[in-house]
Image 1 (tube, rainbow over the protein chains, first blue to last red):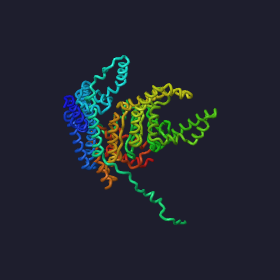
Image 2: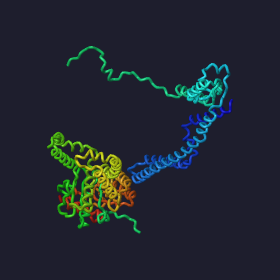
Image 3: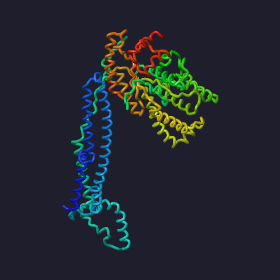
Image 4: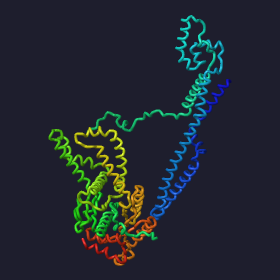
Length: 235
Length: 354
C-alpha cells in the first residue's frame, strides 16, 4: 500500500471513530473537564435535595409545620444552587468543548485537508495499460488529476488547439500528465462515498425504528353514520 | 444589644418615612380590618400627616368596615381629619374610559366618521372588552399609584404622606407587585422598537398629535420610580395578615418568599382571630379550648419560623369589627400588644356598639 493511502486511511479512521462515538463525548469530557469538581458538587446537591424532598414527604406538614416549612425553604435554596451549578458546569463544559473542537480542527481536520491538497495528485496505484484504455481520456484524467482536471479541461482544449494552429505538432504540456493512475484525492473521495453508502444502508436496515403503517380502522363516529338497514323510524 | 423584636407594629405606626404600606394575605383572614386598624393608628399617632387607605380588592370592604360609602375618589373618614379612603372600582373606571371614548368619537363624528365607532361604544363595548382582560384590576390599581406619585411630585390637589393598601387576596397582590418589574421590562423592549420606528409611529398618530415615544419614556420613568420606591425598605413595607391555621400560614409563607424575591421589605405578621381561651374564664367552652390548643400549636411554629418578624397576635372579637369606634378600639392592640388578662373585656365591648 502506498504510504499516502495509509496516512489517509488513518485520518479517515480517526474522523469516523469520532463521528460514531459523538454521543459519548460529553460523558468522556466530563471525566477530564475542569468542571468535574463542580459535577461532583452538583450530584451531591441533587442527592441532598432528593433526600430532603423524601423526608418532607414523609412527615406531616400540619403536625411539623415549622420543620416542614424550613425544609421547603432549604429546598428552594437548593433548587437555586442546583440551577446555578448546572449553568456553571454547562458554561465550563462549553469552554472545554470549544478548546477540544479547536484541537480537533488543528490536529485532524486541517492536517487532513492540507495533506489532501499537498498529496492529492499523488498516484495511489497505477492502472495497467489495458485498463486505462477502457475508459475515456476525460475519466482517466479525473482519476489521475482529481476534480481540477474538469475545471482545467477547457484550458487544456484551447491549449491543444493553439499548439495545432501554431504548427507545433506533438504533445502539449497537458499531455505529459500520466493518465494511467488513480490519484489520492479521487481515491479518498471514492472511499468516503463507499463508507457513506454502507453507513446509509446499515442505518436504514438496522438502526432506524420501524414505522407503523397508518391504521385504517373505522372510527366510532364513522361506524355510527353507516347505514345498516333501510328501515325508517317515524316519530 | 437587644435583638428581640416587639410583638406589635409600634415602629411602623410611628414611622415617618413609610410612604407605601401593603396589607395582604389569604382571603377571609381580616385584611381589611387590619389595614383599617393600621391606617387609624397611624393617623392617630401622626395627626399632622395625611393618610390614604386604598382598597385594591375587587370585592371592596372599606365602606362596610367604616360604615360609610367610599368611591373612586379619596374621601375623608367621618370623625378623622387626616385619614381618607377610596375604593378603586375597575368597572367604574372602565366605564369612565368608555364614556370618554364615546364623547371623543361623537366629537369626531361631526365630520361624519365617528358615528359608527360612537354607536359601537354606546353599549359599553370598551368596558366589556377591557374588563375581561386578566389582571385589569391590578393594572388600574397601579395606574392609581402612578397618579398619586405624579400628583405628589407636581404638588397638585390633595397629597398624602402615606398610602395604605388593603390588597386583594395573595394571587392578585403578587400580580400587582410584579407589575413594576414586568412593565419596566416591557417598556424597555418597547423603547428599543420606538427608537427605531418612533418617527414613523408618530407620523401614524400625527392626526391625534400623540407623541408615542415621549409618552412611553414618561411612563417608563414613572414605573422606574415606583419600582425603586417599592423596593426601598424605608419607604415601603408589607404587612402579612393570617389566621393560625395551616393553609393560611402556608399561603403567608409563600407570600413572604415571593415578596423577598421582589426585594420588598416584609417584617410584620398579624395573626388574627385568636381565642386566648385559657384566660377567658367567663365565656369558656370546650370547643374554644380545643380550637385555641390548635391555634397555639401553629403560633409556636410561627414564632419559630419568623423570629425576626413583628408577630402581632390579635384576639377574635365577639362581634363584627365595624365602624370607626370599634376599629379604633381594636386597632390599639397593633400599637401595644393585646394582653388577654387585662384587655379581655374589650372583645365583648365591641359587641353592643353597632
